[in-house]
Length: 351
Length: 111
Image (cartoon, rainbow over all chains, first blue to last red; front, side):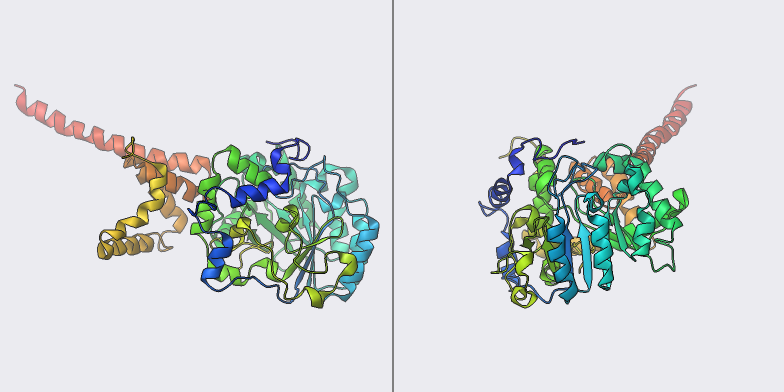
């Protein structure tokens, strides 16, 4: 279990250029596997183009109370990149005028941004249809000052989306750190108590499942059934939907794949599971990702690889939804992660 | 020629068997795919059976494939090991039950 981010460890992979090199060399350079560009060209889907914006995803900082082994953000307590109130103001202007139906706050642990509550209060006034906060659950139990989060989320009608890699302690703690499972269970109970995740409740509580290793997620509906049964029987916990998300080969997960000698096999798996139907609905075509410092990206993964949008509009302060629509999406081999099997996005499968 | 009988990367080439007999190869893969579809048994149950049989058949390719497949389906280590014990129990039981044949023969031969 990692205790420090790649940045703090001064790992070679903290350099995004190095990550992109790895993803373009070896089996992709020697032609053993087709590049993502060539693969989507086979079905006339290159270049991928941005459609009408539906989801505005804002990353309010990379600081986190956990240091998960698979984290594509390389988040952790040692990361200091935090969105300022000024950038949040710029985001609020955009939120007021966007045509997007979903606002999605992520991190790190977004709750650790000192202006998080103010930002949620202001953003919720706009009345956007679906207002998501991606909460890692343990933050609710990490410190007294976060204990009221379930009530706070309820007050602002926030849709809570939380990570939960497995319904057993062993698999959860191995991926996310010792004690994470027990704290997550307590946090889920707290959310249930205020009404989150209950069968007829409008307070949405969805869980995110990432495989805890070098394998792909299986059928989302089947996993949801297993999760629901186990969490209800073992802990009397309820939730609405499970999103199965594929781990993309970047950042700490890429580091793990290389160190465990699983990289090539994993890339083979992704390419073999390639599904052109998933390409049609891949999330970068309807999403825009905003970084802690206000720059714009096609998705959270491109943000972490420092691959900015291919547009004149680069920053939230110059935001123009019309000009951003129709832009060519920036791609590399990590994109195979979103097109494998039933596809993968921050909202789960897409095909 | 390769220096060992088994190469993990050969598993990826399994589909190539159709190249030398397309009709039978395709029929096999069609059958194989159908067998593992959700039916009276769930795909998860079938994967666990396959994992146990992979061990009794001592097929390294199958062990690789169904270890990964069961992990993907959220199967726990405890469930996987129990499934293998079922296979091992049948395998050892199948050996031991022949002991009756041995006993019968001894009883017949001895005065």
